[in-house]
Image (cartoon, rainbow, N blue to C red; front, top):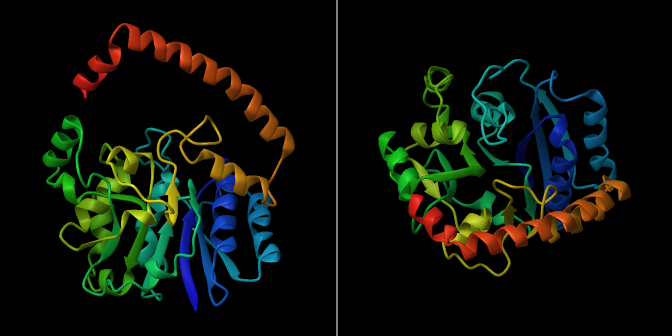
Length: 297
């Protein structure tokens, strides 16, 4: 079986994308091959980095990699919290891959630690898109107010890091592209993730949390022993110690992208940072600032 999957990234995330793809291919069942589509802008991803990613098709015999240049699409879009315009490219999937009825999209700050055939074979024929709920049990008051103000039920809001696009159904609406374009330029708090939730509201299939498991899932008291996909939201494991961060480094060290100097620099820097965080944490606890921060949220 061939499974189509999409990633989008720029030069800064090339190696991270390579690690994510490495994890995907390393854990694929023997009868599974992936058609990997990279959405990119030629002004943001160099030819050298395209060659680097293409080396994965030499390392693994269960994939084909294609690059689709979106050129200047979303060039002036709103960016915040280290989420770049490259994430907006997923909004183009129904148009750019219209010939493919169903497509998986995955962020590059992920590790696919198990075979994900089950997510692709899931029947979403009655839905436009599928994703994992961001706030299945609770939500900060400030975020709940914001989502309510944009007419979204917080309990039905999905994280856009892992999605299944039902292109066949989406493209029955000839106005999809114009709807997306009309929402461009608006300063949504969670950017294109908000756009996805607004556009597909009421037609979303909710996936099991195992297919997009993060530190946020743990905060929601969701316990999964062996999640399929780990998503490193907010702070990244290559920047600082993070829950499941050791797993990212494990795949990195076993990939063709491994750089010993880069790894050692991370170890030295973060040994210093850990001590600093411990000292700050003790000060915050001493003065009761943890409780104040919780109250403010």
